[in-house]
Figure 1 (tube, one colour):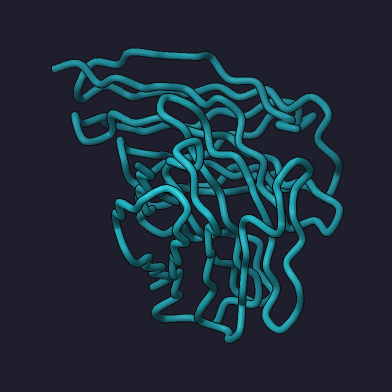
Figure 2 (cartoon, rainbow over the protein chains, first blue to last red; figure 1 turned 180 degrees about the vertical axis):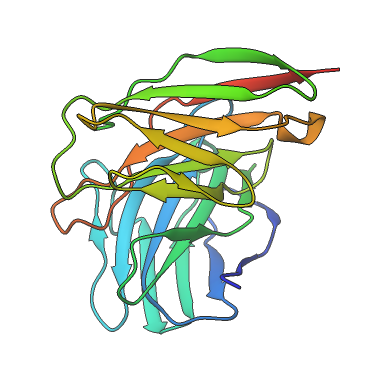
Length: 115
Length: 111
């Protein structure tokens, strides 16, 4: 149990376009989902915390208008990178947490390349 | 923001036990210690977590010192597939839900 999927697994887009990444909890209800980004050879950096039905809470330094997060249901959260630029190229990873538990289960990640 | 300190890298011979240490000297009484690992280009995989008692599951054992200021993750019989970056995390954050990753330990299992 506790499987989290992400779609797409990799995406290449042109500078200035927007890209949406989906994160789904497949076999449990996730009251909270998290979004991370990871640069090559670096650790994961928390971007935002998303609770179902409410606005996401962004970490300091993360632009909320650039990284739009929606958590419309207990099994789906989306991250939209708006007006993407080459510096947004990164590995984006989501995680999900069951109600009442602290353990986070991570998705396989989405590799974004902005040309 | 990470509240943990881990060695940057370690090697372990295949078939031997891998002991990965973690210092978390500022841990609070109700904070759990979590261990995850990340194999190259994949999402982190949950391994184990604990509060103050030693824990064991099918993947590993977690030994937490009595003062809770440090812990050790033990992989009893390391295989080549255990080569990964191992992260020790103490839950922190204003709502208590966030995980802040440190730099982790890059474990290489040698044939």
